[in-house]
Image (cartoon, rainbow, N blue to C red; front, side, top):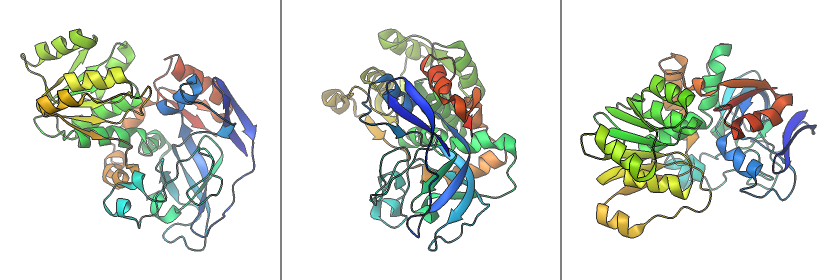
Length: 350
């Protein structure tokens, strides 16, 4: 099969790899219908994170079950499924509390081995083996319209992650919200905040195309400035006040600092940006302002069943974050387009 492989910074290749097979009786093999490039994939692409050896990459996909192990119940060949970006066993303490991304046997697609020591492939491929398939995969009632595929794909990570930011920041009816970051996760966070009933949503963005999509997703205002100017702009929009909630969707020290300082005393910050550059929390500031910080790696599996009905009914269309679609063979161009900000998020079709 064909699979996307990262060899070194800015060295993405589509190569022939062995098609995965069932290893454990709890596995499934899925034929990929669509995958995509995540903003976090850009960290190794840019060299911010090292690549010690060439490996397949990608962790977001939807597809059709090709085969299942003997112990996999409620899934069968031909089922259309959403794969959250982390696997989970469904039995540990973390899973019992809905924190599936913290599962004791969690694996991330695109790593080197799964939690059981077996090779695990990346999602930007033609086929993927899924450990703990019964607990991990979510079956979508068929038939699935092709135009729904992009939005279904966002549930594997990006929209579920934006939703996690909003939930972690306690967004709800009547709340004022600032979203820091205008990538696909930030835009998803705007949509999530709107879905949860926020009264005022301020998107911090300097890019006209992203501002337009943010407004379509429910942003009431846009702030183009950063730092102290950005804080002042938020205050001006909110009648001299700061926001109830901030959603951090970048992962840098600067973005976290911005999120913390646009929130009122006693407010909440939900962070989901994959950390880069080791952002640190200013504990004296948090102590003085009583700001609550929550978030982290989204438990996508725990959210999919909640969000899926709104996607199937087309109440929301999070798939609009994909502004470029390419064949799998052009994966290198997909990375370049996102790295150079020529695309918000790229969908790949095998």
